[in-house]
Amino acid sequence: MITLVLGGDVNLQGRTEPARAFDALSPLLKGADLRFVNLEGPLSGSAAGHGGLDIPHKPNWRHSPPEMAVALTTAGIDVVSCANNVTFPPSAALASLAVLDQAGIAHCGAGVNLTGAHTPAILERSGRKVAFLAYTSLCWPVGQAARADSPGVAVAGAVTSYQPDERVLDVPGRPPIVRTAPVPEHLERVIADVHRTKAAADHVVVSMHWGLPGDELTEYQVAYAHALIDAGADLVVGHGPHTVQAVEVYRGRGILYSLGNLVFDWPAMRGRHLDGLMAGCVLGAEPRLELIPVRRGEDNTCAPLAGEAADEALRHVVTLSAARSTRIAVRDGIGSVAGLSTPRQ
Image 1 (cartoon, rainbow, N blue to C red):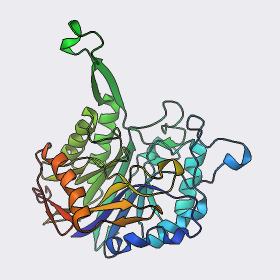
Image 2 (tube, helix red, strand yellow):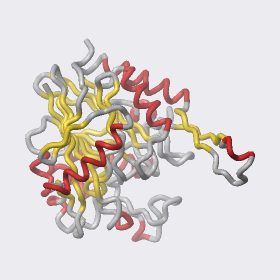
Image 3 (cartoon, rainbow, N blue to C red):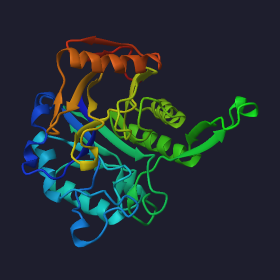
């Protein structure tokens, strides 16, 4: 039996005491065998103070100082995903990986080349190996994806098409239906990654940076999630929309479509997208998945919710998840996901 605690998007900057960034979440982090978050912002340092732009197509974005790594180490974060839309340019990705290596934090989803970006982080606890793979569907189309001979992130892309609404014939201006689907060769690659990783580890967790802000899932999210579970993943954990989305149990495995934000310091995110989830997961013969709502306060401190505020946040997740035929029981500020089954042998 392995216990995991998983969080969503984490951005670290502008803190005078970065070691205290996760203080209010410490009770949730302690006691787990492994702790995972999505690192939404390379620890590469910012070029903004020297007249440059960290990401040319996101002029307001600032990368994080390397010294912010102490926030992760103090919190006991064991492994992070680096596969997201702000791990860019490749030089920043490589600089951040070096900082993580020096700090002793495992990482996945970015590398010196395609092979490196698709290599899992494998951690062992109590004689059991847990592998983490990470991909992003949100990425800049030029220069961000890792290639055979160049650094970057692991991409699981999607294609978008527009289907005319049937009422467009008599209602001019009727908006089209947006359809999305995985890029076929990307889907084949991630399935092969899971198959290969499953042979090297007891459990496989796949991180996906995807989706749109809001409650609604895109078609490609569901397609990727189901394919990953079919390939042998034990858990799919999503982030990227900066909002909480549905939980689904598919073939006895958990899919967390979006955990929302956790500790998030980027100034443009202050005062919005405040709610998130942390997930506690047990992998093994008696799997469990529990949801703990968290919220960033006026001082941007992220802390667990309690009482009616917690129950209200969880009821929202219950409603979203019911649309995916998934039941969640709420009690004492914790959501317990029903329907998980023992791993396939």
